Picture 1 (tube, rainbow, N blue to C red):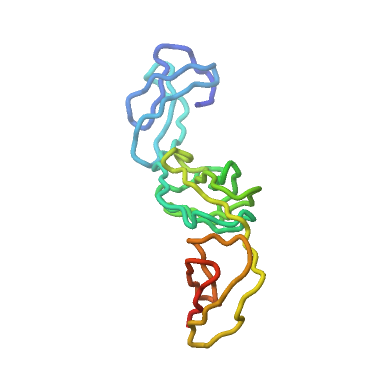
Picture 2 (picture 1 turned 45 degrees about the vertical axis):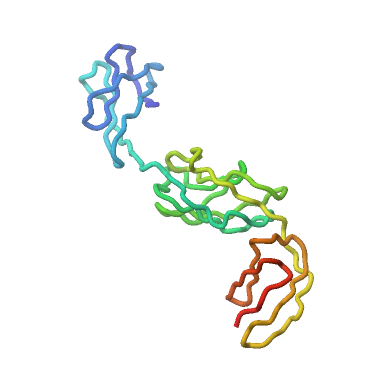
Length: 208
């Protein structure tokens, strides 16, 4: 939609994108017309409206963006209490005016980091555990079916005890962690700066 003044409802009312031949515009009122945007390479072009298809009015800038694509979401799950840093990786993730954000199950949050190939958001709190749709908002083509990913909210974990609470410096000690909210298949334990995985919550070997 282009807003201006002195538009006329004529058969030659046209929109011009760059040096392309004018395209028929849809007259809405003397101050508003609709233009169908033609395909072009990414970049800036001039946009103008002509009542007679020849003479142009004020020229405005119009920017073509590369359509966004999200190829990976990591991690794809996190606590329902929120706070998980979630990275959306893809291409064309450059936002327009208004900023880039992420949507988790209908709740939008602002991105804390944005690049053309990566957007990072903090997952918001959820009322219940379960899977929701997640996507990047504020970029060209945002929310397309191919760019919507599943993000799973998990029950909040709680640790009641760790046995034993000490072990050899050489590592290898089997540590039993007792608590709630653990989910088999995606468990990890962190010892300082080192993270190890375990097939079950009850049996993880401490690293060296």
